[in-house]
Image (cartoon, one colour):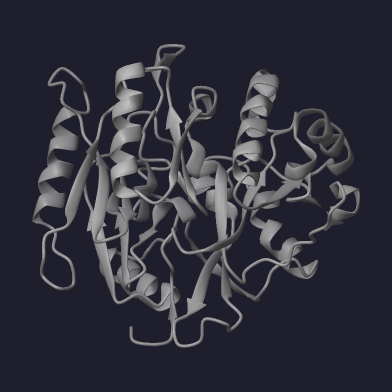
Length: 364
């Protein structure tokens, strides 16, 4: 599709990041202290570089907690939004922002797709309404366009900012999403709704323990200069070995729109992390790109953690690379990118002040 809207890459300049905060009514209830500590670490890291929007039912209680653990400088960059929530996966219920290629100063278009708990696996009605609440409050910097007739999670797509969208066939074709659309029908809808020129389907590389049916942001990520970072598995005894070998082979066959091979940077597969006999979907690909930094999940595996940090630094040489312990996050089968949603420049209207954010609280 050749028009003036496009889906920018994640490294485009951002207004801020959204976190949807954990509480006792979420699946985090059994490890709420641990995941809250992880969220505080994320909030501290993000606010060193840009603004942070936090969606949470109890803003007053969270404000007290933030004041106990974060600096006054960090607090000045935080806006709290009071809203009922089911869970915390902002990547998948957050708005997806399109920008105007012809006019960088034009208001963005924010797309509100239907979020149904990854194919009706989990409760999602409250999370599916968050974007509408944010829009009604005036916190979004552009028009919120409803796509409630189409199921799409932000973690299911990657953009290179040049008109190519990467996705996975395992997720988009999974049950309880957009049946009876087949692959051709889904591709047509993605092109139309995301204003894309090309859809690249990835057919291999689903992580064991992944509740999302194989989101692209767990296995393959875009970086500048036609670079793809991707998860590899070098242990023939690993149950995932053949699938990830097929992923590598497929990526090596891909070509850019100019007909050139991609620059491919392999990420290691973390050693298996299990809980109650179940393997958790640990991955280094689920990093978050912010203004001036990349936040990378780590798993207390010194050699592999360092290998991942070094590889990601190669893809983003102009950014600080910050490791964040993600061992608690993966207990609910996600990681850093899954918990966050970035808003490109112009997409948010957040209050800023030299005072701590008691008056930054907005309500749905």
